Image (tube, rainbow, N blue to C red; front, side):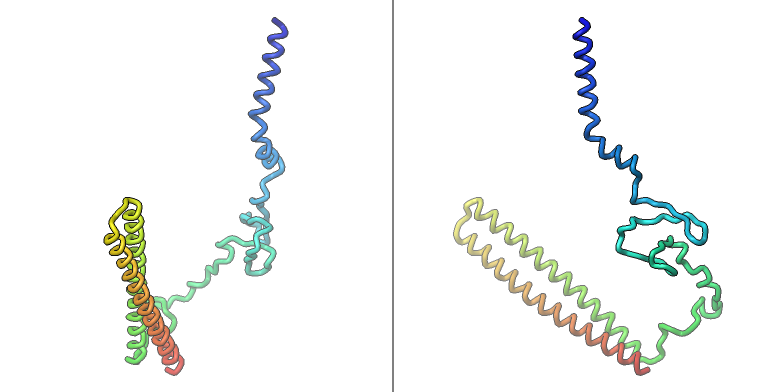
Length: 191
């Protein structure tokens, strides 16, 4: 009877140990300390969250080795001057009296819209191509007739032709946009 109790205790201990083995790395890491979060005190005596020391991004206004929080880098005196007559603007930036410059801004805006629409059309053409290819695969898998397979391949060829045309239109729209931006920059430089 006594032997049976001892064997039960030994088996229970082995079972408990087997359950604890997967948790050992986590326990060791908790005992060693989590190096990803380190708190330290910097010049202003505020506690700031410090990222991992191995992090390649080093930000800071005064010293590249020290890290400062978002609010430590914030310039609170930025809005100290406020011009009430012009809704806070100190100068007249963004306002152009020349009709040529205003027209250039409109041209850039319209060119960007055309590029956006061309990209949308190109995405639709690619989606149509994917649908037609899937339909052709389905037809081949289901044993469709040769005429149906030929028609599916013809649809795929026409989709590829549409994609080629859409890409050409997109390239033309992008070149128009670049030209409009160059013209706007030159007019703003020479005003």
